[in-house]
Structure formats: structure tokens, C-alpha cells
Length: 470
Image 1 (tube, rainbow, N blue to C red):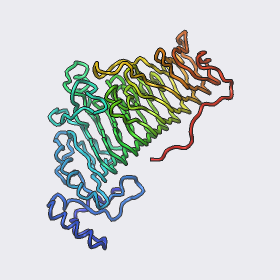
Image 2 (image 1 turned 120 degrees about the vertical axis):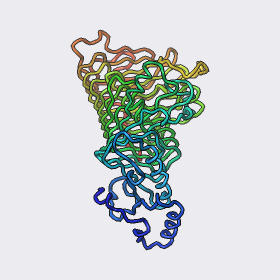
Image 3 (image 1 turned 180 degrees about the vertical axis):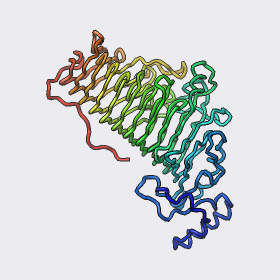
Image 4 (image 1 turned 135 degrees about the horizontal axis):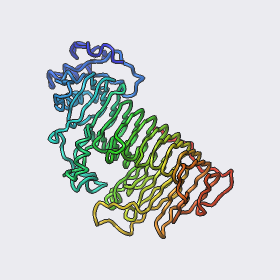
């Protein structure tokens, strides 16, 4: 795809052969304004348009802006200078920044609209461990504070806000968060602000994050928030299973999101669906909805393959997950909520899950504590309803299910069908621990609890076929 890219050293003006005199004039004016930096941008006459996000008319390499891939030199200014220069081409088909082979040490940098960040397969973006390279930004309005500490949070390594049409992709190049120093500070209680994420895109639309490897994030790996039309595809996410809060992918108050074909090893939930925290999330009022998760493989010994919550105070609805594999994980699907969260988790559909070595398959909890402060509303009771699981096979399982609603406010409309759970050599004596729930079951082994009324062998839980398209 990128053959000849590094050899295209002629100026932009020499390459302008569009036959569009108006566009030529505009671009020449742009060159005069922006000077030498603009002249490093190339016109790509033959580029593979079939690769999503790569069909940009203009491109540059990080080395054109002084980038040094030795793993030691800071490239923060090089990244930001390159992106700032390329941003002028947003009205003319957008631009692409190529990260060539090498180890590119950098602090945080901001993306722009109609833009692609492309990593060569032998390129590694290394997150700086110098805290001065990480700006502190305000907490998310739907959270009210940082997750690790009161107040602000360190900006993410790759960050963008109020963007349209932004792509982070490559030939499986790597972003390494070098998170061990952040994890140590977290464990020692030395953090003044919340740890940075690897990638965070806010208030944006038409977002794609694909075909890269993310590793050793200081905290969450991928966090699209307050955004729509998001595709997260073909990622490999790796973290030590004991690393704190290294969630894989966290769609948060997002609409129309697709997560597919990802492999995740995590110290926390592999996919955590969120929408704000207690009174702040209720006030902000932006749900996560129209979410598709498919063909996911997860390893997470201390957390869930898919978690809904616990920050779900803007609401979570219409989540569809299928063809999921979980290996050595705490639970397959977990709903986490509490009094004070308010709003709802509803219309959840899961099918074709294969689980190997699990502490428990299904887990719903209405007593998942932690509040941002003491000003939450104790009368904000979350509603959990229409939760569907079907076609699940699990082996080496300690406990089938722990389903615990809120006293006086049961989780309702639960349906579990066509589930076969093979127990571990030393299973729990009680396989189904059910309180404050209501629903049905069909063809479940070991037999579900009495609160999930047995409907006989042919009842099948619902799974809508009309997938939303991103």
C-alpha cells in the first residue's frame, strides 16, 4: 500500500494535476501561508482506496517533521506539528500521517478531522513516562470527577475531540503505553490525577480504530465517549492480567458502535459498556445504544468478558453480542449497578458464547458500590430488564450464575436458553444464586434457579436480526 511513499519528495505544487483550477489555486495559497511544512505534504496519485481510512489525497511521514524513531528522542512536537500542518487539507479530501518503522517516543497529541493516523507494521509509538508531557484536563461531565482521584485527569496518549471522519489504523503497528510506572503509582496511592488512556475520542462522529496492537496502557485502552458511528475492529490489546483497570474497549455514552474481530488480554473487563456515573450521568443524560459486539476473544482472570456498567447512569440499551470466546475469565457477561445509578440497562441480547475456565458464566449485581461523592440520589433506582442469553457453551466453570437484583426492585425480563455448563472438578455447592430477579429459562444445564421459570426445551430467547450499520 505504501510502496513509493517515502520516495515522493517532490513538492505539492509540482504534483497538482487535478485539472481543477479552483482547487489548485486554493492549495497554492495554502502553501504560501503555511510555508515549508506544507511543502512536505505529498499528493498520492495511486493509493489503495479499498482500505478504509486510507483513501486520503494528501499524506506526510512523521520524519518530514523531525521525527526520530530511536525510542529515546521525544516526538511530541513532531506529531503535533505534522497533524497541525495536515489539518489544512480537511476540506480537500483529508490527509494521512504515516508512522514509519522505528520506536517513536511521545507524549500526548491531538488528532484532527478527515484524518488518518497510519502505523507501519514495524512502527511502535511509545508513551512518554515524563508527566510533563501529559496535560491535565477536566473530568468528564458525566462522571463529575476522575476515576482514580478527585478532580482532573491526564489527557490520553492519542486524543481527539469534536472530530468528524478520523481513523487510527495500520498494518498491525503498535502503541505501547509503558504503563508500569502508572500502575505502581496507582497501587501506592501516589496519583494526583486519573491515569491517561491510550486512545480517547470525544464528541466525535465517523470514528474508526482498527488493525493495530495496543499494549501496557496506563489505564483503559480505547475510550470512545459522547460519539456516534464508531467502528473498533481488528485490534490486539495486551496487558498483564494483574494490571489495574486496563479495560480493553469502553464505549461510553455512544450511539451506533461496532466492536468486532478483537483479541484482548486484560487486567479488567475486556469490553466495558458505560454511560456516566450517578447524578452526573443522570444529568448529562446520554445513553449508550445501538452497540454491536461480535467475534471477540478475551482473557481476563479477574474481570468480565463483557461488562455493562457499573457507570451506566445515562442508560444502556440495544446491545447485541454474538460469537464471543472467553478463556480463563471471571465471568462471561456481567451487569454492574447500584442504588444511586438510576436509569436503565435494557434490551440486551447475547448469543453463541464459548467459555473455557470461568469463575461464573452469568453475573448481575445490584450492589456494586463506589460513588463519585456523597451527593448521589439514594432514590435513583436503576431498571434492569429484557436481558437475553442463548446458545452458550461453557466448560470448567466454578459457578453457573450469581443474579442479585435490588431489594424491592427486581431485575426483570431475564431469559436464558440453550445453555450447557460443564462444571469444574471442585464447583460451588450452589450453582444458581438468585435473588430479586424474574424471568424464564429453557434447556439450561445445570438447571436454572426457580426464579427463572422453566419454559420447556423449545423456548428460545430473543435476538434481533436487524443489525444497525455503522
